[in-house]
Image (cartoon, rainbow, N blue to C red):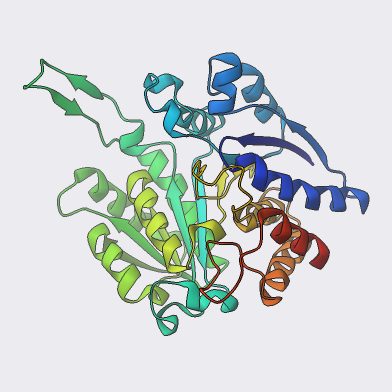
Length: 353
């Protein structure tokens, strides 16, 4: 199991350090784990002038999976767009064809009260959002800003090919088949022709999955329903931009964005695994970051890339044990509990494992 470790910026190195402790335990138990680290994002730009150096991209291509911390920070916001840290993750998705993003939104029983919604609304929540990552308005051409000041025009193009739509919908259907056999496809077909094509293709593919119940929902209604009645959803599949927004909304149903992992997969199961919370530069180096999303991302790595559900289950059980013991980092701590540090939370998971 060759794993590329890309810590990145902000809290990335802190949370990845806790995940590495678990990898070391598994290695000592005899698991054939090999790791190699490389720079990415702002840290890579500072060292090499590029957010995604050729050396880092080469390591990723030679690896079976990637554990990715986070990239970005305010001091890089004035750089040219092609030099900003965020270009690293977009570049990895494109170069490695990590087209299928899986983002679970799960409410742990111990954290039902941490959500801003009532506990009875979110208790037992278990949603999987499947987001297409390599098409849509983020990559479509033409794009850019033109014209003179006062008359400038900004252009971005929503663009999807039928093959791109088909392959992500197949991931959605297969994911639903392995769970509750319910798939909700999200579009905006009433005004966007691109997503009318999406809906048409979804209906065609549904014939191949007679055991999965397909329903359609407009994206604005979905945004409302996630807050109104989130437990109606099982698996949600959608395009790049809608998925970006909806998955972040769903993450807050759980109480903290610091709890949620993600996987970005290619057609062969190779994946990039990262927490969805970002680099959080305001708390970097203070021991305040929650490492659980990083650790749960690693569990997803064993489940999806290495087909080791046994290891994934062990890691997830250890996270639940740490939470059951009452430990909370600052983002999930109630007003009456004293938060623990990043290292203390990671150590609790290690002990439980």
